[in-house]
Length: 428
Image (cartoon, rainbow, N blue to C red; front, top):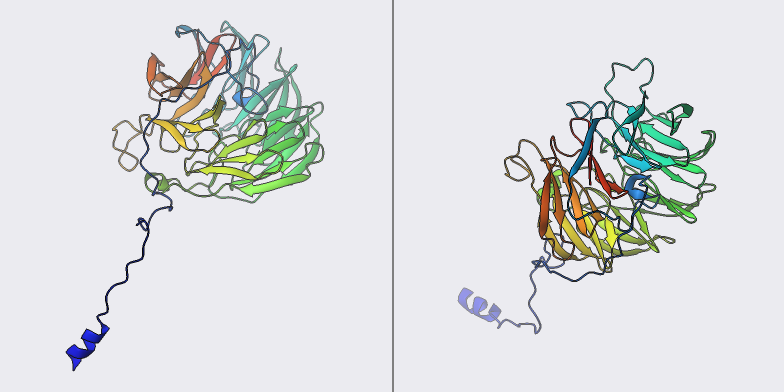
């Protein structure tokens, strides 16, 4: 009887027609295997820029294509103050304006030198009563005759570029997130407490503040505001991004950059926006450190695409592509219209080369910057690496004693970079 019942239940299988797909298709981490492609690219002509006055080269955090000679030879190395140590880190790239190079060391010391490496002046921005405190963080921006510095002590200071004389200081009551951004008559600063400040350049008065969503998973130094036209785009440590009208700080739109890359990068738990927003025409590109880069419409915040790549620094737009160092130490070329990868090059991960879970020292790679027809990456393992933007092939390395501690910048046909031992190095 039981066999009869079982036999009655054993009806023939009905097989649905159509293509068979893996259950994981379309899920994060199930992307198709990529093949590197040497896709031609139309680059803007190199331009001999005299200045590099803000992080990324401008308030938009991008500079199209600085001119740079085909070979790099050391010109000078000058001490700027305190370098990297167990408690302090260099967080500001050097800036160049009107024949002067400005630096911020890891101990809140600002220095100006000529483009020949001669020191002009130096000033400590350590707060009285905190001289024994080892606090780092912050960055620089320079505009006209004024240098603006944000420090880990929670201050914004304006100084004369020729003498270092302090013109005003504003207390923002929280460590500065990253470099300030100067646009029109305002200095924009984001604090690690998720507050944004718009400060008047002439007297240091606060024009408006904006409170973002608080976060407890932050980096020591974060992203800065990008500004162009009638929009200022503010990244917060929580992953929230708010676009405002500059004059009064009225919100235009807001979004959250969330999501993480599965696998190795899952060890990165921070929600922080690690890369400055980059405004390029009608789009803004923003990335976090845990595995997402997005393209948004600048005026509306509408999302154009999302790439499952993290961003260790700002993207570098050029031609039909974006170049970025991602969250797992790869130099990647992305399609500007879709966010898909065209090629990727693995950069060294650590001293032992044992991946993310077995390592002694994790290498850091800064950049890239497109200059002189190639991509340049400054690395903490002691090399300036150069790559062909078409294929990603290496086109030569240059020794960088002590290793890089900042993104490279290019002005006047000279490349400047900070090293971990607290030196400003110049290459021509």
